[in-house]
Amino acid sequence: MHAGLRARAAAAGLALMAGILPASASEMPKLDAFLGGLERGCRADGALGAFRGDLNARYSFEEGHRRLSATVRIPPSIAGAVRRATAERHPYHTRIRVPLVGTYRGLPVRAITFDIGHSNGVNVTTLAFAAPVREVEAVIGPDVARTMQAFAADEVEAMLGLSARIVPAGEGAALVCDTST
Image 1 (spheres, rainbow, N blue to C red):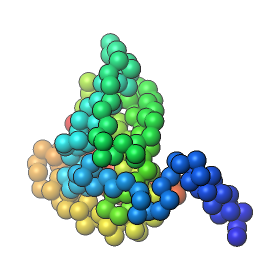
Image 2 (cartoon, rainbow, N blue to C red; image 1 turned 120 degrees about the vertical axis):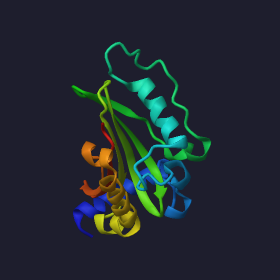
Image 3 (tube, one colour; image 1 turned 135 degrees about the vertical axis):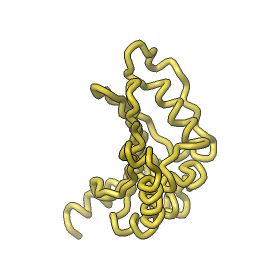
Image 4 (spheres, rainbow, N blue to C red; image 1 turned 60 degrees about the vertical axis):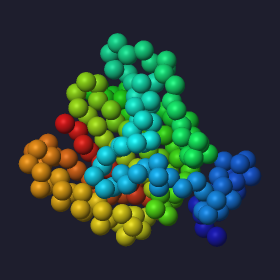
């Protein structure tokens, strides 16, 4: 076995023994209902929208915002999938990254990241997969293409440059939904 593969296998084995990862993909939490078709229109609705709002209320670096005072409610159905969030301050937005252990439409998920503007319309949601670009494109690519067609067909959305795309991300791929205004 190649040294890099051996190291990854050992790390995965340690994580499994520590209870960080489920024993198999079939035991991984399914995030389909929570993520609610994010690739179909790039909308953070329902539970995902509430989660995003709670994260913003807790972690925003926006001027005058009382950081860390709000509670982030995690839906019980995905509690086992959510890891500790981190927040980074950027000049015009806050980037909140939440590691996830689960699957979406059968694809293993690594994290969801929200770039939330400081009163300026920045709004980017990135769903990172632990699957190669070709696998992600095969599963959600047609929906992403339809989303881009819908954005292009809407005069305002086209003018704003709304976009949905699948990009390489580390050793996997990511769905990037940019609905910034």
